Amino acid sequence: MAFAETLIAWYEEHKRDLPWRGETDPYKIWVSEIILQQTRVQQGWDYYLRFIDNFPNVKDLAEADEERVLKVWQGLGYYSRARNMHAAAREIMTKHNGKFPQEYDKILELRGIGKYTAAAIGSIAFQLPYPAVDGNVIRIISRIFGVCDDVTQPAVVKRITEVCETHIDSKRPGVFNQAAMDFGAQQCVPRNPKCDECPFQSSCYAYQNNLADILPVKKKKNELKHRYFHYTVYLFNNQTIIEKREGSDIWKNMYQFPLTESDSEVSIGKPVYSTRETLSHQIIHAAFYVKNVKKLPKLTENQRLVNFNEVENYPMPKIMSMFLKGIE
View (cartoon, rainbow, N blue to C red):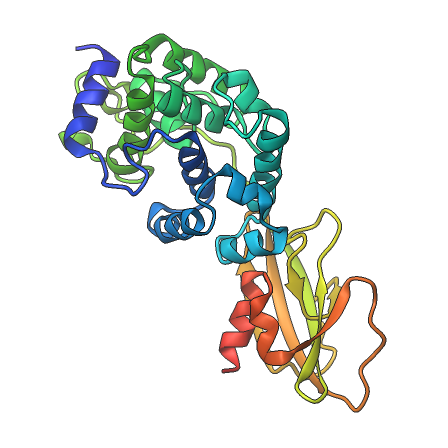
């Protein structure tokens, strides 16, 4: 049996029951794919339902203000995903008359959409024969077809993509891509893959050569950068100051208490709460200091005065929510 037929046969028996499964609306497929880029299915499930509930279609998302979008997204992290979706929704309204583009190249032009997401949307919604190559697919192709080179290299990913292009079911490209995603997520998993019950056992290069724990080959990740954030929580008649993060750094356009960043873990007083959060390329060490004052400092352009118990109404990084819960 050919690769695609074997894969789809496995999928028909083992596919996951997901809220977006069977969906053909490109908008909803797009939302699910963006959420799953950096989020586990279990966590993304409720966020997907909440996002669709708040923004049922492209028009609703485009017309929403950014703060509301970020608030609905809050807790998922990688907030550039939400900002890019918001911008892309507005592109669809202005450049495509409110209709999601049906051509792969046009989908790819939308803000925040790369080759994988464009292929996923195009194949599932419009049956365009483009393979959606993500980490799951890279892993299963590396193992089954014996790609032994470093998969972090673009040339190797290109080779894997070409293998997928050769084998994709042109009549059911959406099913093929979803089958590959599920197979990598459930069967050919990163550690301890289920080789003993794999339909590709007889033809899998990794299984035949005892390389399932070696493939795919990846170069070592760079060491995480440590950053030290010191937040000052001003209190005056139950009012406090929050500021909007600007520039191109993490958590852009999210709100926080006034921040001072240092090069090392030096204390600027006795914090009432300390925590840390590990991001993809850095570790944030955060300390929160409460100052009861008789007069608040002058606000800068990106700051605003709010009631302390209303702080949570603003979109904020997870680390802020951790502090607010920690002092309850």
